[in-house]
Amino acid sequence: MKRIAVMTSGGDCPGMNAAIRSVVRTAIAHNLEPFGIEQGYKGLIEGKIIPMSNKSVANIIQRGGTILKSARSMEFKTDEGQRKAVNNLAELGIEGLIIIGGDGSLTGAKILSERYGIKTIGIPGSIDNDLCCTDMSIGVDTALNTIVRAVDSINDTASSHDRTFLIEVMGRNCGYLALVSAIATGAEAVLIPEVQYDIEKIIAKIKKRYEEGKSRSIIIIAEGVGSAMDFGKVFGMIGGFDTRVTVLGHLQRGGSPTVFDRILATRMGTAAVEALLDGVTASMTALQKTKIELVPFKDIIGLKKPLDHKLIEIAEVLSR
Ligand code: F6P
Image 1 (cartoon, rainbow, N blue to C red):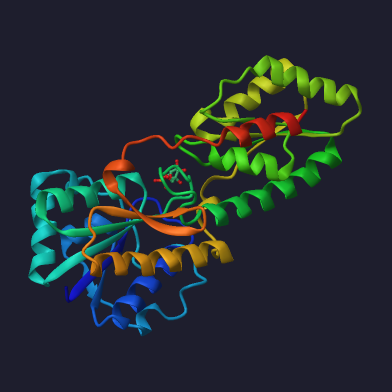
Image 2: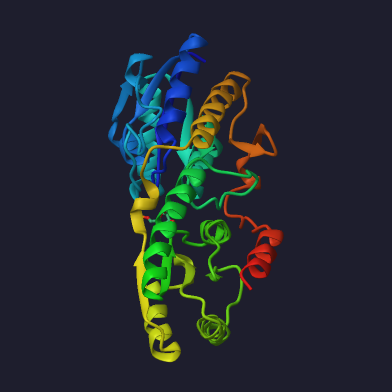
């Protein structure tokens, strides 16, 4: 193998740049020629493939987002789109591809390896932490720190005004961000798609808190459960609380990556290049306990990552 390429795909996350840097510099150290594909699968189809050097990844480890840009591609789902992508790689003699992204991005990588024989390695990058077999994906720790900072700030103003705040956090199908941020901020309740909730019970709990003289309440809602705006109306109407709603939105996806994410991304980038050199394909780098392992796509893609039940229990017990 002489030439490899790296790309970022799907929703971006902090730490993607650290992973790109690690892939490029590790590849060069192993006498490989690295290329970068701009805008994920869309750019791959359109031939947006550029040579990368040690210099082109300088001064990016601390930057959020992705210098290679990211996109979602409908065309890659078609046979024609896939053939264009494969031809563009063949024209440049690129034999190995590293894809940084979530479940959808890894599905594309699986197709490229199974149908077209391209050697592919995935690196899990998604703030949702919804990818199976890896304890953490790149971006999760930074997103959690961003959420916790925001909730702490809201907590201050909530206390001053004796208000109930409903805070919506990201997590399309997965309550990890909501659950962990609720524990880390001492929220009074958390609503996640994995656990059935009882709104009347939560309202009764908040009422009791006010009766006991507690000044404010914070409820964290995973976007996968529904709109915090809608829940806010119910809380205001039924509970009669002075309620405010904050939707944190895309600020959770940006910002400078934490040390944890920089190191995780760096380790995974190196592991991905080494895996290609070892002849591994159709696999994802995964953090398991303290080690970076390689797990076949077939054991990851389309599977639901279970939430840690102990964390759910802790959230329930400590918010009483
Ligand atoms: O998958 C990551 C994620 O941030 C989800 O939490 C969220 O639902 C989605 O992406 C938002 O996607 P977009 O940026 O396309 O609106």
